[in-house]
Length: 273
Ligand SMILES: NC(=O)c1ccc[n+]([C@@H]2O[C@H](COP(=O)([O-])OP(=O)(O)OC[C@H]3O[C@@H](n4cnc5c(N)ncnc54)[C@H](OP(=O)(O)O)[C@@H]3O)[C@@H](O)[C@H]2O)c1
Image (cartoon, rainbow, N blue to C red; front, side):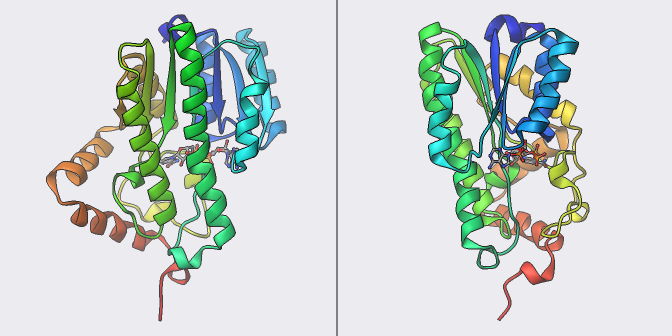
C-alpha cells in the first residue's frame, strides 16, 4: 500500500473521518505515511485521532471542523487547504434517516439530501481541477448498495447514493488518461457505528452481515490505484449487485431490496392509512 503515497501523496483529505469508514481510511493512509486533512463536525474527535496518528506515524495533520450539510461551508473548504498539496480526496461523509418518506421530517430530508450530494459534486469539481495541474491524484466517492435501485424506507438516501454513483462513474470517464483516478466505493452493510443500535432501522434483520471496515477500505485503496470506476467490496455484495443489476429487472430489484428494508424498519415508520 506504500504505492498510495508515492502515486497520490503527499497529502490526503478525508471527509467524515471522525468515525467508521472515514476513520479507517485515516488509519490506513497514515500507515502509508500520507499527511492528512480530516474533516467532520466533531473537531474534538478529529483532534484526538490526529494527535495519535501524527505521533505514531510521524505525519503532518490538519483538522477542519465543518458541517457539510451546509453548501456554504462546503464552498468555503477549498480555501482552508489551498496552501497544501492534496493528491488524494476521500469524499465519504454521509448519513441517513430511514423510514417512509412521509414519516421523515422535511428539515432532516433536506439536510441529508444536501450532505449526501453537494459535497461530492463540489469536491470532485474543485479537486480534480487542482489535481490536473499537478498531473496526478485520485478521488474516492462513497456511495452505497442502496443506490443501485430505488430502495423503499430509505428513498432519499437511495436517490442521493445513486447520484454519487452516476456522478463518479461519469467523471471517471472524463478523466481517463489524465493521471487522475476516480473510484466510487459502493459498500453494503459495513461494521461501523452507523449499523449499531438505532431507532429507525435494525440492521440485524438484514440478510447480509456487515463486512469488516478494514477490508472495505483496503479493497478501495487497491481499486483506486488501478482506477476502477466502481468498487463493490465483498463477494456477497458483488453477487447481490450482479443479481440486482444484471440478472433481474430494475422493478424486481427494487421490490426485493425494499422488502428487505421493510423487515428492518419499525412499523411506526411505515405508511399506514
Ligand atoms: N456502514 C455502512 O453499512 C454503510 C453502507 C453503505 C454506505 N455507507 C456510507 O459510508 C459513509 C460512511 O459511513 P459510516 O458507516 O462510516 O458512518 P459513521 O460511522 O456514522 O460515520 C459518518 C461520518 O460522517 C460524518 N458526518 C455526518 N454528518 C456530517 C455533516 N453534516 N458534516 C460533516 N460530516 C458529517 C460523521 O462525523 P461527525 O458526526 O463528527 O460530523 C462521521 O465521521 C457514508 O457516506 C455512508 O452513507 C455506509
